[in-house]
Image 1: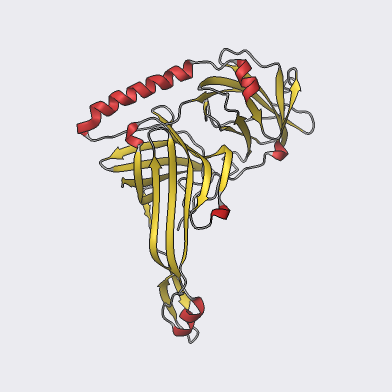
Image 2: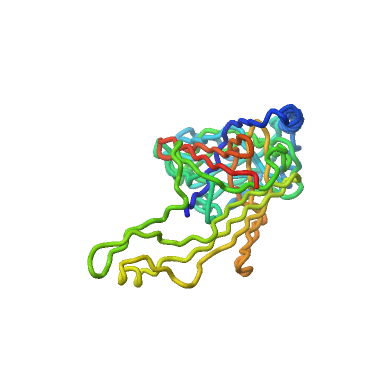
Length: 361
């Protein structure tokens, strides 16, 4: 059982569909992409942004922030980024210095700024971890990029008054000695939930790959030492059920489900008898994550979780009022009855490609 954590990283998108439905799918997709283009060109009024956007671990201050001194570097690995209805977005920023805070000024697409700014305490933001799943598409981003700069994540939260459209923000970092970085400007695009009809349906996990090499999810073989000498090679778990489903609804709802049952090895009995002996009590879990999905040709496929349900123990259920980003801008391809999700990540200067294949259920 392989656990992966999420890296929010935008990629290009490629869609391949069967020839019998290609024209209809393309026509539908062109309509969706035209809507996405219009959304990108639609400004969200600064009054709506001011009343509907908050920043975690921050204080709102009147006026404009102090001017940059240019004596602190700043780096952001994204250009314009995505925001999500009733959720928000994350700002990832890094510096080779030691920033202690950030100033953020929101403005509309035409450059009209709010008359206040957010003073963000970076010690309160940290490097927030996403929900830990049993199985997880993608890989955990290193908090260090290839230049050795530590990445900070700033969480921006939307009220339900924020509509689809585009707004922007100016951001700079500062440190404890008064150094202030240059200003970086980014724009945020908020699209509708849902998208390509080809994504809609129930998808069952088939295989995963890392840099083209198939990852053997089923093998959990280990060598166990025997009390009287020698050793025995055995599977750590005798797996009964191991299912991973992704379900995308046409209205933008989604859920993901993991069901696993297995008899784990009885270590003491196995080492004593020098043969594989398994526990009589079955181990398992049945988890479901619920949320929303969004897709367009420019930004790819993104998913935000809003709830977790433990189908075996309801006392463990959780809700995420402002959402938790599962994956963002993931490339999608279709080959026959298969949906292929691909994400490339950079870990300490090394590019790794993760690919997960699902089959229509």
